Image (cartoon, rainbow, N blue to C red):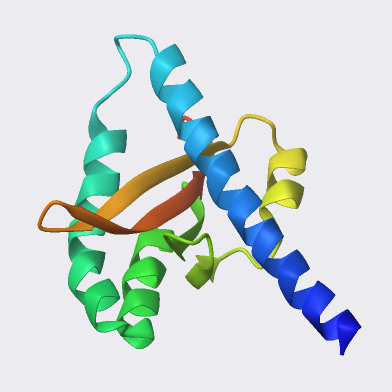
Length: 136
């Protein structure tokens, strides 16, 4: 029984750490981005956050996963996930590897975070990991 409680607590702590790390990474990235950085990054998060808001409000995991899958269809997006305000992962699509393992593979990958809001109230967070753009 004790081991089960510790395991559940451990999972919640890890989920919370992932969300906090994503928030800090997004903040540092935003503060350190050069002025010439394209605005597409912000628009992408805002776009998908708007699409996800009704599904998050209804707790429709099937629709959330469908939207995340469409997001990860972009070759530059490695994974996308939705986290509750408490840091629990609601849904995830993309690479099955852990965030830490993906960042270790390529330090140039960028972790991004966008709030999902209903009216003016943030209800969840959209987190995604991108690869640097490659010239084709």
